[in-house]
Length: 296
Image (cartoon, rainbow, N blue to C red):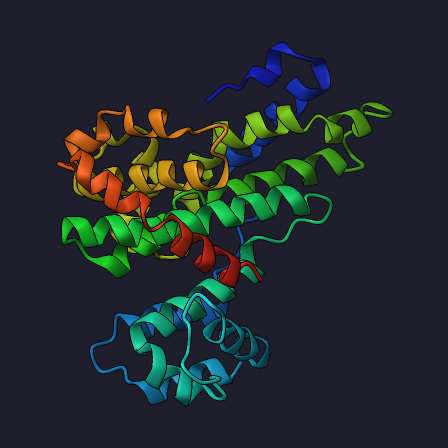
């Protein structure tokens, strides 16, 4: 998908060409799904999984265990008493929620680390967290699978940090002799953002395949922004689209005021009525608390 960058400045056009060539040739370095996240995902879909297995799995990574305990003790989950061990966390939160926390914490370390773009990555991460949390709320209203909805929301734009990393890596490559233009390229964040917006879906689909993500998550990554083209999982795509808009309204209300949020046909297509939207909006503070807790 061509971006606006090609009409702006020759080095930016060259940057886009280099990006598309790498994607087309399959030469981009996709991140590995963190080992802990992969194991947690497998365990979550195992009907024979139990709390002891999950606790033992998290214990294998001391940094992850510390993150999980920190999140479990946060205001988002309001423990009646301090959670002092993973076994205690399982008892307080349940295996499903603890799996979700462990997967999210391990994912943050694996895919959302780009030196020099910490603020941009933080915004992407917070938006992903908010979309995942809102997706659960929409799923409850629609009586759909809550855990699947969370995963769709959390990962629907997983291609964005990856495209950002690839683009900045290309720009910094000494083989690309752009001289003084390099600093301007890296400072032109609006143009790099255009590349991220233009190519994240294409790269996200590649990640979904490499990570062997559930089919509904892969389809959401591909069609969330164009849910009318979705086939097998159109409901999940619409649900995630709604959650994405709610996340934008929560985190950047100046860009997504409530009137704009409500004024979209997706709500009617998903059979969500004004009172359903009212109910979803009452969860904003709760979602923000969860985002802050997961913002490691």
